Length: 350
Ligand code: SF4
Image (cartoon, rainbow, N blue to C red; front, side, top):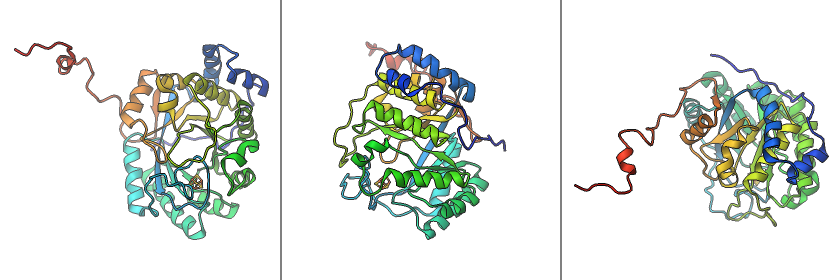
């Protein structure tokens, strides 16, 4: 099996400074000029490839934290189903299906403050099987972690851990009170020192300023983060974000471009909320981002894999994966001879 070797840390310097980043976000540049500028490092580091990530919530709800954006936070009463950790058999089956569907990476997400020793042991066993027996890359998102737990997970084969900054340090107190920005930084630093690649990004639209967004982009650069999910806030029922920002597709493209230009060799993911916030500009985002999710997000549905692959191919890009069947568009063409009569506005009835 071919294995795609990935960098663990970003090494390339930023291509813009904070004041230029702010000008882009303020709309002071021509959109297509900015996209063109950001497409250059995208093509240089990733060519025409797009990585498809598939998320699996292995444990949902029962969380004591109060992250304001999350449907699983304590007292959210969001209507989202809560369940204890899935069995290993179930997780392995879902990982295999994700691989067969063309996933590049399988993202295991477990709700909670952070895993205890027993949970780390359990997750290590599952990660080892997905990595070695199924042959699929894994990213784990399980909350706060110290370096001894990071070491156990790395020895089990984990090469990437997700721990988002979510927003800037200055804005963090507005979105969460049960843990601090510093707690998150410490987890990222523990993983960095153990040599685990970091996936860390943000959620745009939680009442932050454009300067906060610039701050996050450069903090991720300083932390050498190699994978950056750029999520766009989805107002789940029961959320506690005080003043969600109004987002529009053009601003979303500008934000993705800034994250690319500040972090030229990082995987930039157009993540949660792309369907609702980028809308008809989703395909334009692939000129600057090289990664996305298919089959939904933590607790909200999104585009299915066939639709996602179709968009990638229509935009002139190619899905990147290590195995499974290449699911090029297998659907019947809308204008095929078998379907054309179904499209007639006025059809003879005989
Ligand atoms: S983001 Fe994670 S830690 Fe925060 S409330 Fe949701 S499940 Fe809990």
